[in-house]
Image (cartoon, rainbow, N blue to C red):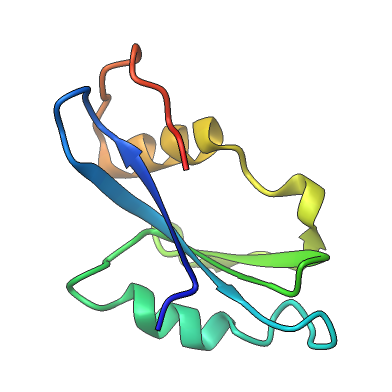
Length: 105
């Protein structure tokens, strides 16, 4: 089961769209520990999100399915903001949503 799903609203009247998920692991594990599990969840038709994260609360690892890249562990303070994820999602999907609507998690 997915620990956290991050969603954005593409327009004021639209339902939120899932753009990322986070697999949370105990801080005694490396940040990479849950990434494979999270990638499996992300590939399901129900979720199908482009950004996948695994975290131990101190660091996180990102897999970007739009580029196929897995990034090295980074401090949790560097986790992408809702606006950054929204911009990357829109670029990857080739769309632009209404800029008046802010991304909220």
